[in-house]
Amino acid sequence: MLLTDITVEHTRVSKQTGVRQTFLLHPFTDTQRDTLGKFEIVRDIREPGFKDVKRSTFVTFQQLAELYAKGVLDEFGFSVRMCPGQGTYPAANPAKKILPTSIRPGSSFDLAVQKVDVSIPANRDLRTALLRTNVKLPL
Image (cartoon, rainbow, N blue to C red; front, side, top):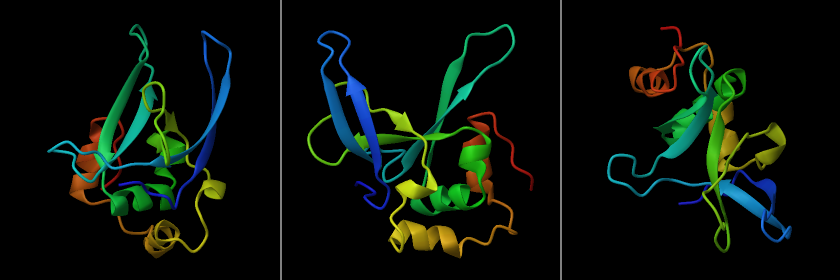
């Protein structure tokens, strides 16, 4: 399922031919058994003495809205795995940052973000998912 409430424009330049392609990307839910219906969020982690690595975890629609409302995506540098609405992306689907301008005003995702009570701590499932990316939220 595509979350068309969020649209990010992405231009890809082919390394071989130099051809520029512009795509309109949207977050999409995974189709695998354990992560079915969840969105992948990705974070770069830099640890002294180790190579830079990417860590990812999967969150539900409501958890994604909560992370966005609380500023967690921006604070910890998360990106969301995206795919084109039409056609196919010629390489691995990119992860992109979600800016407020990328969210369609009045959409179901925008309304879900607005409904989040930022004073309530994240639930256990969300905190556990974020631990996989080395992010520890307060209780």
